[in-house]
Length: 535
Image (tube, rainbow, N blue to C red; front, side, top):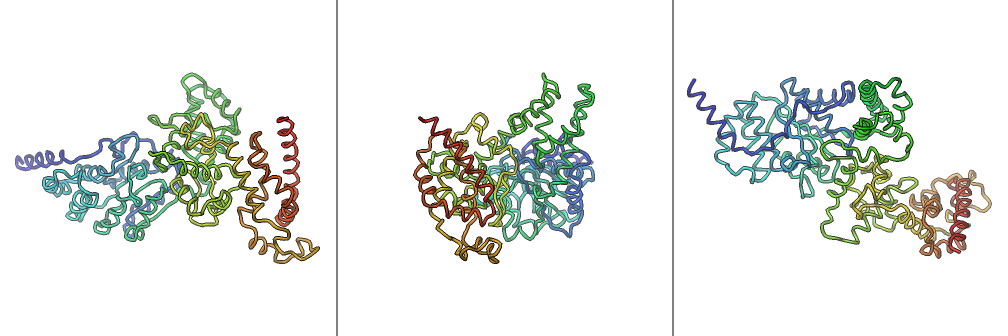
């Protein structure tokens, strides 16, 4: 007994030399999903975690604020209750050690050693041989701290949880930790990895690696049926606001109309619903007063954007951090900043969304240039690999944030709507003046649109999505600009003098003549106001 105790003490002393991130593992007091919500995805993860014939890796990917961490917390809680949680690492940019890639494997190894005596016995001699393990490569770390000890423990089966991998600092174009995992995961049977993260390029490319891709099951959280997500958000709001009503003794509050409005504003973004509840629970104003502020500004998201979610994090600071991480503009690059503003400005201000190729044609860039700007922002945008799918913000709060100088404090990212509409007006007129000509579709003389059987084929062959957009919405952007029309006056004059009739032909075949007439009336009113105002 004494020898055993002495051996255990020696192992624990060696184990203390293993570097790890305190607090990075699952905590019992961590907030997860509200009971009754996210049932389908949680059940799917549960099924995957128990079936070792399924892929050893599960990647839950989703846009910022979609609820990935809450699902990870709930999954870890369930696994812990069943005795199947081996170890966990909840990454966070708010803590230096929790965003350090070189502390993930040591921390997981430390937790495994605390949980499994056999693993600890296999690990301690390896630690003695590698006293500077934190400085080793990730490849050597995983082999020494995870794989080798597990090879000696054939009777262990477990799930390891890594949440918010995108929040770790990694300068490589492909996730280095995922490339290492792809190399070794096949060598440790009965071990599963549940990983969450935003769809950032380095994370996506990591999961597409030849060794890891066939071992990974992917679930895209923001592609879940909106009806299911909205039902979960509505249930979350009903429960939380009912608790507030009870706490503050509010009778008949909130109404079903209030709940429906808040659910509509959340638009599938769980973090927005959380921010709303926290905003309503104010230390001075009552929940009813706070809700009135939101209702009185139905098109504004500033209150929720400024509400603190955890530590110092707000929805606005989350967006700012993603932009900063996406575009590390340490050295000023005016050309890059201008390109970023042009692309993001187009995405958030277009009347109808366009695919990346359409955005590129409209603003005068190459498609690849536009994609390089959009790729790091996939956690804020709906951006598909399908080249024909339009790109657009996932939630209204992002355009609201980036167009408001009081919220987006980094002027390199701030989008001025008037200035950007000014440039989009120029872009639309430039495209129209350069692409249109009389009878662009080579239609037969005096034929009605419905008499041309292949009209849609002709439209597709001669009118690109960008040109169609320019023809439909140039006047929308023009009438939103300021009073300075000097920069596009020549282009507007050229359009009205030479391209007006070809433009009418196009809006006719597109079936938007009525909208064009309304738009021209708006244009005339705007021109009268601007011209009279400058006299």
